[in-house]
Amino acid sequence: MRTMTRTRAVIALGAGAAILFAGAACGEKADQGAGSDKKPPATSTSDPSPDKQPARTPPAGGTPVEGAQLDAAALPERYPTMVWTQEDGRVIGVVAQEGGCGKASIELDQADTQVVVTMIETTPAQPQACTMDLRYPKLTADLDSPLADRTVVLKTEQRKR
Image (cartoon, rainbow, N blue to C red):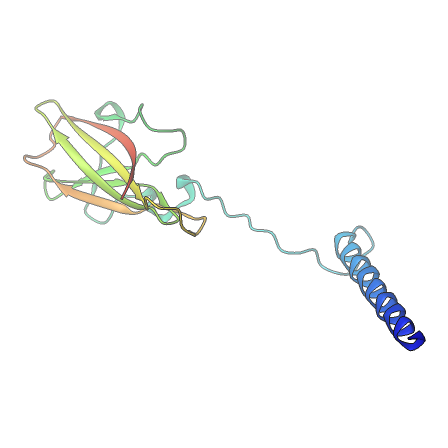
């Protein structure tokens, strides 16, 4: 009986020492201030905003739609606003935003004076594990007639599948 008590005491002391050692090691890593020759951990300087994404210029052969011809007032702050046309104005392209399990798509509503481009992010209806990243895919759609001087109105919408 006495041996069993001593064994438990030794195990308890060993576990306590391991906890103290682990705590000291964590404190050492966090306390790498001046005078330390250890390098601090690398930090990322990447900016996930659309301004830093490769999708900031139209594809080859694309003509940007800018200025008064572009109405992006309905978009959330920092949402991409790049729009272009291709194939003599018969194809319109945009940079959308999607993240995690989301998938971007676009829908058009065409009239004589404007083209409304709704950028949709569709996410799963049921909760699931997803990555925490943002992507900015370039999406295109055919127009019924060339864009010409029509205004492009950008909107965004969230949907569940």
